[in-house]
Image (cartoon, rainbow, N blue to C red; front, side, top):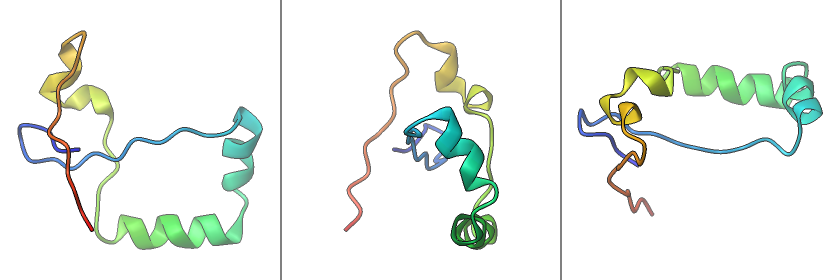
Length: 64
């Protein structure tokens, strides 16, 4: 999705708290996150203006 300020947002969930915790010690996940951090920033969703709305609206992106 894209915010009004053109920030691109990816939303996903973890299968469980344990899966999230395990990701922090998984070499493949750490490598992937390292590659992501070279081309993007991780920001709190609360820093986007849309997060102040009960029903936040974002523009869907269709990336093939």
